[in-house]
Image (cartoon, rainbow, N blue to C red):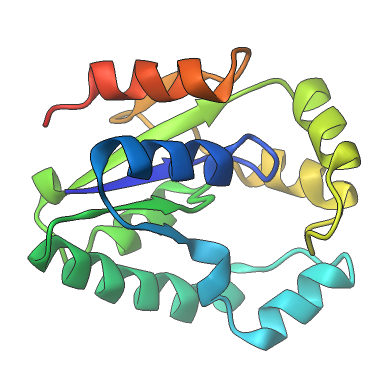
Length: 162
């Protein structure tokens, strides 16, 4: 199974994903590492990506998810803000091979986190566009980020159907 931690930038996908992968003895991947350079440059410039920008990236991630499922699974940090993005991500996999975990938090809390973070190409100014694009998932584990990464990880493990 591939567990996809989703949510807006700054919600803790990478931090929690690394902890979760370690606890489950699975490899961890960050979807940001699969973006083509043109997408990274666009985001660094403060320009939100559109669906056309994201499509080849999501299709590549879908192929990777299929590959990871042939092995022992993985944990992936990926914003997956829209339903159609999540559909692309699981397109090459059986429904039970992908589990979404939505890390949910308030805009204020996440903005504070983004402002404290350095070295990431996603500027805090793009947070509004992420919240505007966000379509909360129906079939996902929903976890509040108003707790420590360790507690979030424990909550996810307790709710996973492994």
